[in-house]
Amino acid sequence: MNANTSKIIRGVTRGLLGLIARLDVVGWENLPADGSGCVLAANHIGRLDAFLVYALLDRPDIIIMVAEKYRKYALTRFMVRLVDGIFVDRYNADFGAVRETLRRLKKGGFLAMTPEGTRSSSGNLIAGKPGGIYLAWKAGVPILPVAVTGSEDTIVEQRLKHFRRLEIRIVAGKPFHLPAAAAVTDRDEAMRQATDEVMCRIAALLPAERRGVYADHPRLAEILKA
Image (cartoon, rainbow, N blue to C red; front, side, top):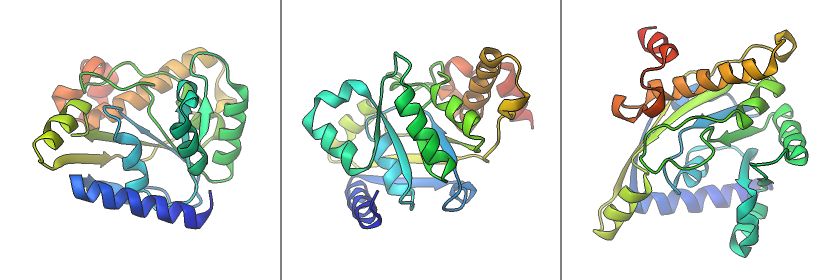
């Protein structure tokens, strides 16, 4: 993306969010330096989540993957082109999208993704999917777990309808690496374990009542204890 375009998008996004929300951001010092490839993995609770990426990240190399189903809307196509996003087919092997994302990650790009693959209607964690996690594993870049609360669609609608500002909290954990791809003999099992690891690290950053299907996961208990 053009650096000037990126600055304009970030400025507009921050201005709009500043009008409707107060952001409480914790752990943002854990973000890798500019030019370092990284995958930000966050829970997904509302339509505002994508805007938070551009409001909080001061980088021109953000990679956004958008579900193929939104390609049919002219406005979405325009916005995806504007931010140099990548449409991806979530239900079939989309090798073109995978190759392009890996290329950008290895060049130092910053991929923002939601392992759940869709918004959680309850606001609680739902089961993660390995797609975006596979990209971090294959590219050998760190994963930054991030937890978001307060941007749930129902809360946004209720508060804005009554002219009340949103209270959104974003918590970033410590970046971590998955085992090297070369050391893995069973890829399917490695991806299952990697997905649980990422989701439990996100769960550890969330309030207890928001941990959803990972609330009783043994790996979450280990992380919280540590």
